[in-house]
Amino acid sequence: MPKTHTISKEQAEEIRELRKTIKDKQTDKRLKAVQLRGEGKKNKAIVDQLETSTDVVSHWISLFVNGGIEAVLPKARTGRPLNLSYDEEEKLLAEFEAKAESGQIIEVSDIKAAYQEKVGHTISSGQIYYVLKRHSWRKVKPRSRHPKKASPEVIETSKKLTLESKN
Image 1 (cartoon, rainbow, N blue to C red):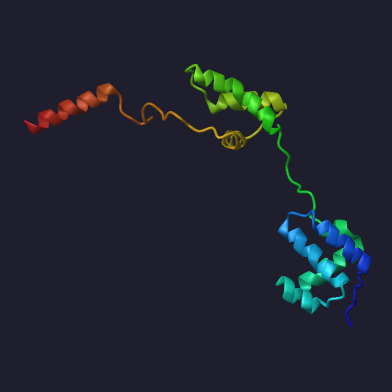
Image 2: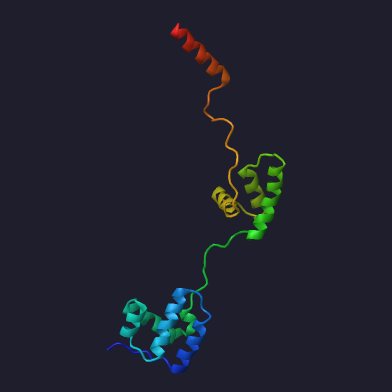
């Protein structure tokens, strides 16, 4: 026979008060499941009310019984932290923005070098593009000519050959 977890009415009331401060729908749903169990409802009734599965409800209740409210609340997100804060990135880009407004051409390689100097280690070029996107920078001026475009002399020679062949 499966293990039945019990939750006291006092715990259910404490969860009811906590739910008033929760803005995240998923967290509120978890807490509501635990609250309903504390109010004496069976898992099947909770499942029907919250429109989820019995395994999920059992898991939430088990988490609460074994770890308390903290176990049901969402965990802090983990991952690779940013090298610089948003404000620090903004300061770094401000000097390049001033150069651009004065008419100078800004290259990503220059921004990358300044960023690497600021953080003290190398970074990929892709990371600089993420920084620029985060600060809504965009490429304003396209390149002046295609790198594979023929030189003016070759174009003139081609025109002369075309005219001669028509005559």
